[in-house]
Length: 130
Length: 413
Image 1 (cartoon, rainbow over the protein chains, first blue to last red):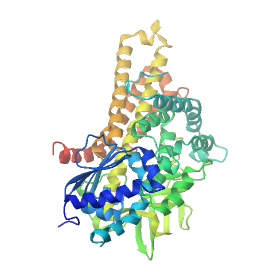
Image 2 (image 1 turned 90 degrees about the horizontal axis):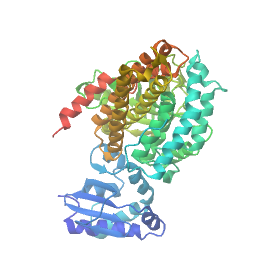
Image 3 (image 1 turned 180 degrees about the horizontal axis):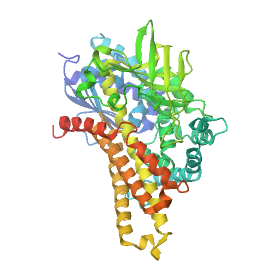
Image 4 (image 1 turned 90 degrees about the vertical axis):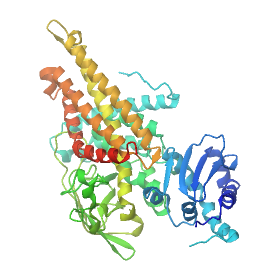
């Protein structure tokens, strides 16, 4: 059994997380300025999350992703809890990506608020932090 | 001499990048490399008044050392295609300077990928802001008892506990202690201020029990060997690094055995992709030398290029150069755009391009006749430089075996 009950809950938690980042007073404008569309292909539960300059979308969409990341939902959960780093997850093949690394790297410094907010979301939605 | 760009989708900025880097390679890098190559004592390359420092300093002022570093850390953050364009032109000027600048970027490039605060503050920021050769990197992997065999993750012997590295790290408190020796083929090993150091942590896992550390090279217990005296790429200083109870803080160790093999594979995929781009540039340089000479030199009452045999040779050289660019661009763009990379394609690029560059330089020497083996002509240097490349960054034979393992594992699977 994974961390998320189902796809709907995963969309709700991760959607709120990313929406918060896009509305963050410092990171939000920079995220939008970067102009990147990132597609997360998640498994267990299965789903697709799109982070675009215009907001968070879920499921099948007619966008072109600049970067595509494939990972299990539980790995996304661990990543936001800082229990696994991106290079380690990539090295262990827990995350695979398509799209040039410089585009992925552009976003990393803007993600600080997500690390702060995710434990709060875990508490709100009753997700484990260990 | 400008080649026809077959990629019709290059932007104006990419074309401008190619022209600017080519101009620098022609006016600054190549003349300096020829001057340094002629020095009898390789130690003189690094003397205070050597032109080596002037060229590296100019590249740092232009920001060329930051091509792999993302823009938000202050780097140029070139795309994979732009990286290929950049490296082909630099190496057209000099393979040795391309390698020296390439490994210079390695510690900081790795640090920027990991992205942790201590690495950004201690490694990436000082590197990016360096305009005076105060921060020079190297890739310390090759060892007295190990060369190409250190590179080829995924092969059966890589997990044999009887085969382990010469440089070893053991945990002590919050940090690590390092002992052992890296061999004389460490590019920039003679003078680098920082190293991306590949070492062994868990001997029971064989070569796979490795780790990767990013360390300053002014720590107590670190010493250097003499600059290597060698056949080709003599403008590239190479030398041993010796570690005697060297203590490093914990943040310096960026990979341990659980991720080592995959990190090594990603490193090889990047390094070999760069070698493909480098030796596309060198193959082109050798071809252009031959083409120019054939248009000037008269033999048997007519220009060399008017002889049909010479024309056929020139065509074959041209074909190899274009094939080099085709495979090396594709391999670099794919493997710098996908994680995990398909390393067999980077290896194919490295092996093909270095072999082709050697063959083109060899044919060019033949076309020059006696002058081809004279120090008077640049082609003699290019021939020596390309010979070294068949071994550099992994010998082509061993790399081919590693690629074959990957092909058997991946192709059609």
